[in-house]
Length: 174
View 1 (tube, rainbow, N blue to C red):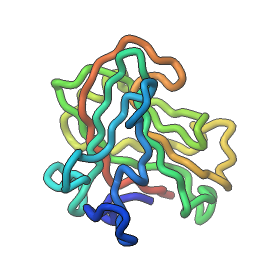
View 2: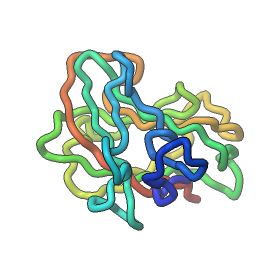
View 3: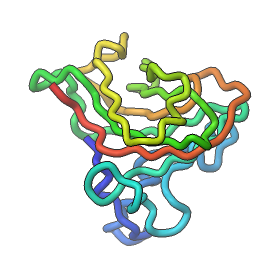
View 4: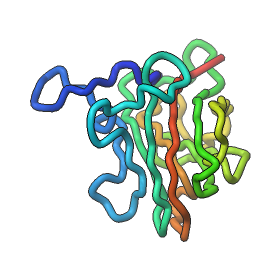
């Protein structure tokens, strides 16, 4: 679904521009979303701390009276029931210096599944998080239009901290 390899450092208006933060929409320019995706200057995607391939997504979060979310609008795949798919897998890595925060994935802007570790942001090794698609109750899995990676508690901002995460190799599995 997204291995972060297709993103480049070409700026608009060049038609070949495919920057990571133009696809994963974060909280840039808002006061309610504390997520910032990508690096300020090229390379926009992370090219040193990666799980697979040559790039991952750097993700800064600030949960001081905010929730941090980055959302990708899906073109393909939208039917998450095809080919006996039952799970969503994503790889993440945090830092022991991060504020301990909850991590979630939401589909279609609503149904959220939370990582079992309430301080997942402090896990320092690349870790695979496998989520059973049944955890996204109420979502029409034949028409998934967005996936959101969030830090904090969805729709419930509180006094939280800051940190940096890395995400890579998001895929559907049987």
